[in-house]
Amino acid sequence: MNGLWNSFSALASDPNLRWIALGCMLLGLSSGMIGCFAYLRRQSLMGDTIAHTALPGICVAFLLSGTKSLPLFMLGAVAAGIVGTLAIRIITARSRIKPDAAMGIVLSSFFGVGIVLLTMIQHSGDGSQSGLDKFLFGQAASMIGSDVQLMAGVSVVLAAACTLLFKEFKLLSFDPAFAKGAGFPVSVLDFILQALFVTAVVAGIQAVGVVLVAALLITPAVSARFWTERLGRMLALSGLFGMVSGLLGAWISSQVSQLPTGPVSVLAAAALFLVSVVFGTKRGLLTARLTRREARRRLLLHAAEAASSASASSSTSAKEAG
Amino acid sequence: MSMDFWILLTGSLAAVSCAILGCFLILRRMALIGDAISHSVLPGIVIAYMVSGSRGSILMLVAAAIMGLLCVFLIQWFNQRGIQSDASIGVVFTALFAIGVVLVSLNARQVDLDLDCVLYGEIAYAAWNTLQIGGVDLGPRSVWLLGGTLLLVLAVIGTFYKQFKLCAFDPMLAAAVGIPAALFHYLLMGLVSVATVSSFESVGAILVVGLLVIPPSAAYLLTDRLGVMIGLSALIGVASTVLGYALAVRLDASIAGCIVVAAAALFAASFLLSPKHGLLSAKLRRSRLSRRAA
Image (cartoon, rainbow over all chains, first blue to last red; front, side, top):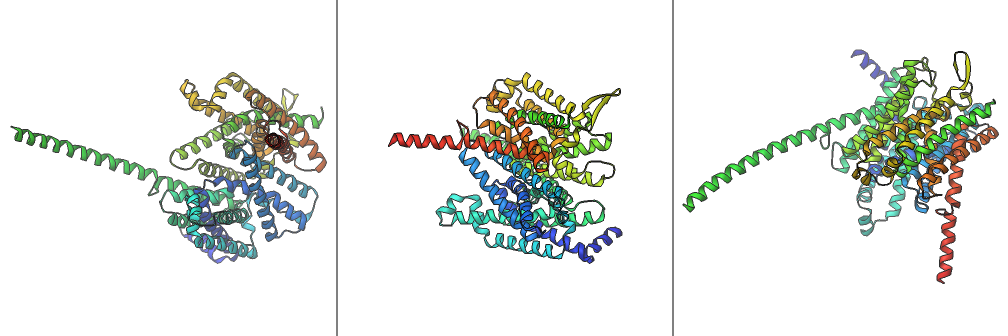
C-alpha cells in the first residue's frame, strides 16, 4: 500500500509524468463527452474509421512539410478524416453498398495508403521521420509540455463546446426532424458536431494511437449508459470515466517498463465498462436481476391479495344474495 | 522457384480465402464484425506464441479461432443486453486488441512478434520460412498454412453452400425451414477467424479487413448472383495481389499496404464503371431516360 502511494505521489511530483497524466486525463474527458453524442446517433464506429483514415493525412503532412510538427499532423489528420467521411457518404449514397461495408472499405483503403506512405518514408532513410509510426499505437509517454498544452487546449475547447451547445446537440441526437421544425440550423449543428468528433478522434490518436482511439470515444459512453437515463449525467459520467482511464493508463504504464500507455488506458476503460455492466444502477445486470425479483415478489403479493379479496367479496356477495 | 512466385502465391491464397468469406459478411451486413475479428485474434496469437514458441502452429490457429468466436459471442451478448451493435463491436474489439498489444509489449523479449508485423505483416519474409519434414524442403510454411485454410474454406462453404446462401439472404426463412442459423453463423465466424489468423503473418491484422471487405464489395457491384459474386471476388483478390506486388516493388513500400491500395483501386473502378450498378452507367441511363421523356 505504501509503495502504491509512493508511486502515486511520484506521478504528482514528477513534472514529466504529470504532463502525460494531465494530457491523457483531458483527452479522456473530452472524447468521453463527445462519444456520448456519437453513441446516441449510432455512429460509434465512425470514430474507428476516422482514426484509420487519419494515417495518410499525417504522412502527407510530413511529406509536404518535412518536419514533425504536431499541429501540422493534426491538420493533415483532420483533412483526411473529412475526406474519409465524405467518401463513405458518397459510396453509400451512390451505390448499393451498405454503410458497414462502406466504412470497412474506406477504413482499410485509407489505412493501406497510410501504410504505403509510411513505409516509403521509412525506406527513404530520412532520419527525421523516426517516430512517425508512433501514431499507430500512440505516444503518450513521449509527449512533451508543448504537446500537452496543445492537447489540453483542444480538449478544453471540445468540452466547452459540448457544454455550451448541449441543448442543441441533445435535440439533434434524439430528434433531428423536430430540431429542424423548431427552427434550429440542423445542418450547421450537424457539421459542428462532426467537426468536433473528428477533432476528438485526431487528438485521441496522440494518446492511444490510430487503432485504439475508438475505445476512448465508445467505451466510456457505453459504460455511462448503464448508470443513468439522463443525457446530462451521461455526459458527465462518461467524461469522468474517460478521465479516470486516462489517469490509470498513464500511472500504470509509468510503473511497468515496456508497457505502452494507450492500450493500458483502453484496458482501464474496459474494466470500468465491465463494472458498469454488472453494477450499473439503471441497466446493470445486478440491478436488472434485483428489479425482476422485486417485481415478481410484488406481483405474487398482489395476486395473493386479489385472490383473498376476491374470495372475500364473493363470500359477502353470496351472503347478500342469500 | 523464385521469391516473387512464393510471395504472389502466399498473397493470392490469403486474398482468395478472405474474398470468399467476405462475400457472406457483406451480404449479412457484418463487414465490421470482420474488422472486429481481425483485431481480436491478436491476443490468441500472442498467447499461442508464448506457449508454443513458434509461429504458424496449429495451436495458434485454434487459439485465434477461439478468440474470434469469443469476440463474436461477446458482441452478441452485450448487444442482447441493450448496447447498440456498433458500440458493442467497438468496445469488444478495442479491449481484446489492447490485451494483445499489452501482451506483445510485456513479452517483447520472449515473443519475436513486433508490432509492425502485427500491423502490416511480413509477406516478403514468408518465403524464407520453409517447412521441412525429414530434411526435405517442402516450400514456405505460410503457403501450406494458407493453402490448408483455403481448402478448409472451400470444403465447408462448398458442402453447406445452400445453407450459407439462405442464411445470408433470408435468415428468417432459413430458421423457418429448420436450418440451424446460429450454428452456421458461428461456423462462418470461425472460418473468418481462421482465415484472418493464417493471413495475419502475410498481411497483418489490420489490412486483412481490406481483403475481407474490398474485393467482395467490388464484386457485389458487378453481379446479382452469389456464385458469380464469389468467383469475381476471388479473382479481384488475386488481381489486387499481383497489381499490389508490382506497385510495392516499384515504390519500395509495404507489400500488404500496396495490395490493399490495389484492391481499393479495383473497387473504385467497379464503383464507377460497373455496367449494372456503376455511377457512370446510372448516369447514362438517367440521361437516356430524360431524353426519351423529352
